[in-house]
Image (cartoon, rainbow, N blue to C red; front, side):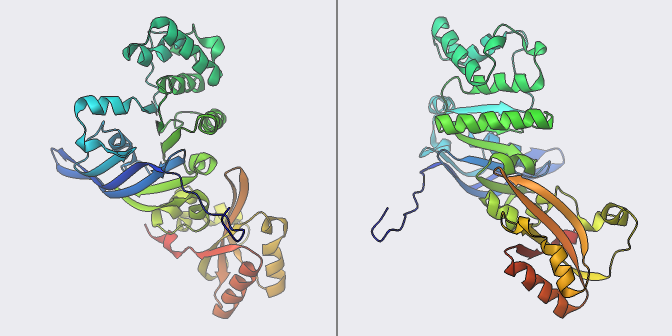
Length: 360
């Protein structure tokens, strides 16, 4: 605490910095710009999400972070080292501090669970006895100590991913890259893997970078997020801030699960029983922890004497806190629109226009 009773914000050092990174592939059809001028910084110990729709370029970006894919231009700096300036030997040494897990697990199917976890240790020249001891500790960490003699084919998808996590942690990495690591898993198994990653982050301080197209994953585990669209970084910042006030078209689409409100039918919105009111203005409102206890919309309708269209209503979990959201269609009267918006803001709701959602 500094003099005067104020707390000074302490920022963690940057463990990864990406500066003006671009990646172009040459194909038979011509050049493809997979990434364009990406700039981002990731703090040590953070859980950082990189999200985008399929084909956005996020998997190319994660492979550039450890130079499995060499950028066409720009810099990737890890712990102060510019990867582009390292020799092959230096790059191999640095990669040992970066673990990676994939959607497809990438386990050695002919080896047992414990041999899979031992594999990277043996490559580093660790003695078999020491490697087995370390592997058993890691299997206990991921809750699979009773599966060391099993083979991947005998495990569920979630268990295979836990083995992959244990293997990725074998060399005590400082960074863990997760490329769509939960995409092949059911929701319950996904939740258990995310809980495991949060536990590992809290206990070891490892920096976790998660590549995903699932906004639910970002809301559940990430502190910060970068949104990639068509190879460009269109928005980044705190997850809660972007959830509450999305600015880019891509962020808005991802937050409402990629559906355009103009594509919703009357049956989806009203079960076909009540025609939509004439409205020409749409707003998105987000309920905080306090506003969720009051029937704000019902009270507003009673106060104003005019109904509104509820085009969408949902509750999402953001860092373990339930956050409600609605998209409302307001009546055509401009003065009434402003009164309604003021009413909502006065009661602690976040309100924003959603006209951009209608763009294709």
